[in-house]
View 1 (spheres, one colour):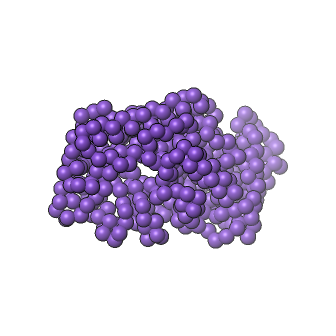
View 2 (spheres, helix red, strand yellow; view 1 turned 90 degrees about the vertical axis):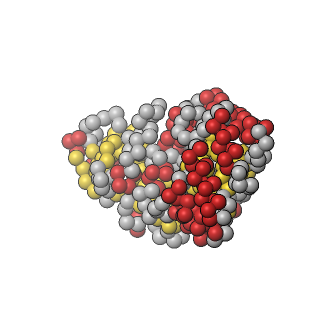
View 3 (tube, helix red, strand yellow; view 1 turned 135 degrees about the vertical axis):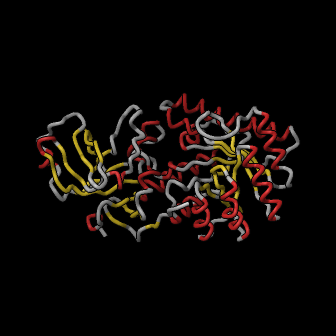
Length: 378
């Protein structure tokens, strides 16, 4: 099937680019001497996760328990649920463990740790819990130098084999755009997570796993002494945010949205396409970066960037395509006639991917196999 036969909008995955991205990251982790546990929330797709494991990944990271259920049903057993655990979700997590899933969960507070231990005692069911560490003030986690870290560790260690290690995510790396700054943050992420592990061990507590990761820091780390594994997710597709950060080029971006020109506002220099925010998402992650790509970078049907054109606005089902430096492109109707197919590169691959139930694997302009299903829900 040729892509022209697809109903638009459609999510396309350039398998050549995706495979190269997978191999490059895995080879880097192998070189640095650590295990790699990809974060599959970006794709939520069995076929892609299987490609990552075939390349050498050891286990996966998920952002929802629904993902854990679906990937476990597909035969993937070693799973880290990397969102703070709360009591109402313990039944769902327990059901997975009882079916044989090697599920790891995380905690970053006394309340969470206490709830896990109480549930474990009441149901005589062991959990493996990793403590989330805050190494950059970006989101959640306990400070590596805090007393709370040790308190949580002692609570979890009341039940032997419950405390499994520490993990962190340097999400502030998305705000950087120079190799020096990224290398500095990667070392900060590494050293502070290792500090947390060391403090637990000094206190007589077990800490076999020391897990770090974000796509920018994984690609920028110079050495990973003391780290047992790295996690990263968006690298598999990349996106315009990652291009602005500087860890990929637009020619590495494997996910795009196929769209069709459905009309014009010639006096405004607009082409109207059938990919609005329901296809691209409302993510404007490049807005505060060096290059603002609007709602996405325009490419031709072969995936070649058309310089100067972006999706400048998006309604629910309509996107507005325009020349960025001109509000009166009189030639736009001739350049993009009604019926023209284009591809739009996404700001945030995770958010754009989430708009579609399936991905179409392609090689240039040829669909090379059945669509790949994508998971939804929590």
